[in-house]
Length: 158
Image (cartoon, rainbow, N blue to C red; front, side):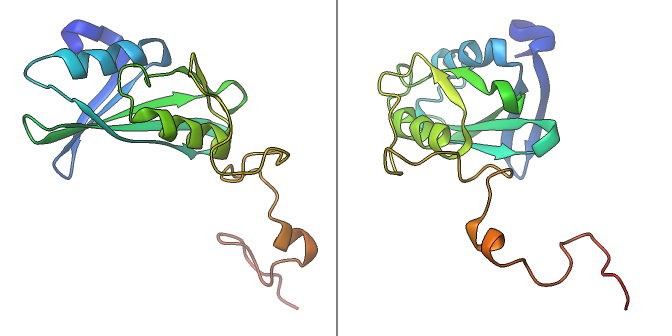
């Protein structure tokens, strides 16, 4: 893979029996296509696409691909700045990515350019914001402050 993608493959490791590849955003679509078309890999099924919000460190889009031929999986990770969380769609390569991309867009605010149906999947149309982002205000905390210290904070002694 390094021969094909060079420094655009940021890391390649085994995590609990699953291959995990981190790639630059500019080569995401090309890598996913390679994983599908390379006979030795033959990742022919997109099982999941989602995101993780790392706040100041940006978003990480995670796509889990599976090979029904070879019975192995590859997890592809792409780090994006939170204010420019944009990737090309892979829904034309993997039709199963369609709803996963829509949900990830809706919940985390990641834009999948070229997606054939970029409309909300779960939330009502007038809903604003992305509820799985860490900066999304939790109304229960707005109405009633959370008791005690937040995780990692010390409580003031009285």
